[in-house]
Image (cartoon, rainbow, N blue to C red; front, side):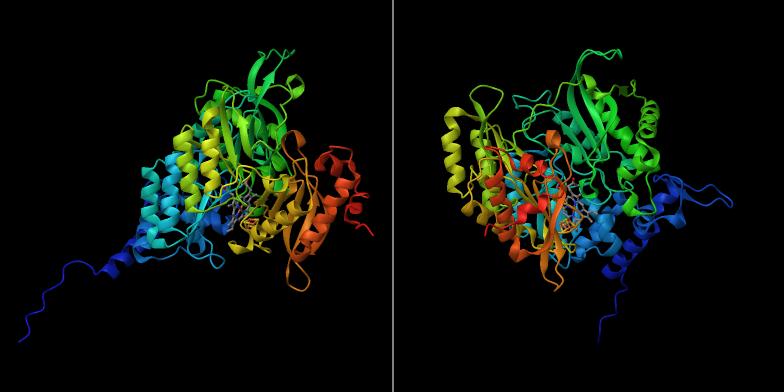
Length: 583
Ligand code: HEM
Ligand code: SF4
């Protein structure tokens, strides 16, 4: 005889999973606490998001309206339990949490960290090495925002990774999609002998303020903020939506107290051929936090929510003007109970920025304090193995101050190494295969992920870049800095328009991979957008064509002239002469 069937209590696991998802989709939080600027005006009035009717929102805006990105945590629980990847608009929403489904080019999730001011600790690098080894693809990359990225993460590991990085005092929140992205500061902040002021504390404060402000998550589009304290290594701050640049202001008739301020430039977006424009506005270094937040609020309330191609700050400034934006910022500062307004003064009274040292991110360099140095290690296009990460972390802990700085040049600095420890530290790095010297070609090469790991990629940027640089360093001796930026598509993640040489992925008429070539871009005191030289050229022609350009430059330049200065001395008509091969 069968035992009587026991009546099961509650729901089966599948039923629970279904209900959790269904409830999450209902967005009950919104019924009780609207927080996305939506205005249900009652009766026949259409509902709006910051002035845009719901029916006009683009699909990403609609997704954020239906589910605030912060409220994804419950669904993350389910995806992790089921080892299920977020797809479609869920993938878009999850990017606000730092996890990107980058299928089909790379399996699993890519995770992008958030490392404000590009500053982390040696012991944190050890944790990242462990995660890369145990829960990701066994490697990491330093990115073009002085950040770290891991790949090949199975969805079932997402919550464990979040736990581990939080325990280590790290975060990956707000590093993708419509976030105020990793906020950069000069990597030598705090120990640079030429910097005017260490702006990294304000960078970190603004980053934390944004992460803890619900209204500043899920912006109309991504938003980049950078702080330049005037140090020796550039963070290409003028390619950002907001650039705070430390300046010393001299005597002036406008009654502004001479002293140290941050000059504010706005709307940089190098892929659209625009660097941040001067605004004539200043604030004190400590005021940058409130100013940054106020500007983000103005962006949230006024940027385009119907067309993502026109949603970046540049387009708001083009449409409404810089003066309008500054006035709205002043109003917002009042609303935020700030006790100051923006200072207006043109840059005629600013002392010029000290020149950047374009080789300053590689090798041993003295710090401000006598007898103390930083070591810039060279990485191939930003790639790191867990073993290298461990060595770098340990060297920072044993010989430096447990301090590490990541650079937008896709490498790492180990600061605070005393003179008498230098050779030991370098020997340990070199023994692990980490170079502390590099040719000008290797020091200046940066590449985006490219076709290897990004569905937009038209060319294998990292592999092509590595091959090209090896060829150039075997063929030429170069005594001047040279940056080669490779981006896999016009999205410009490696900012080809501000490289001495910029290579943009393209498809050749026969369907094979190739590049367009641009020349003569730069940032900071060298600011400028590159000019087109040729293309598309096949990937297999890179060595020959870029080699010819370098050879002509070396043969025709004035003694010691930099590539940038030489390229800029050529008119548009003269530029193609760089492609002529010696007969
Ligand atoms: C799945 C596709 C994509 C991948 C894998 C990717 C990868 C990256 C990475 C790793 C960075 C450095 C970011 C950081 O550390 O915070 C970056 C930056 C950048 N990305 Fe992308 N990206 C993608 C899509 C896009 C798209 C669609 C656009 C433009 C429409 C874009 C534009 C940029 C730009 C301009 C930068 C330059 C650095 C900066 O933000 O200032 N990316 N990208
Ligand atoms: S530039 Fe294009 S190919 Fe490169 S990572 Fe960005 S979106 Fe992908």
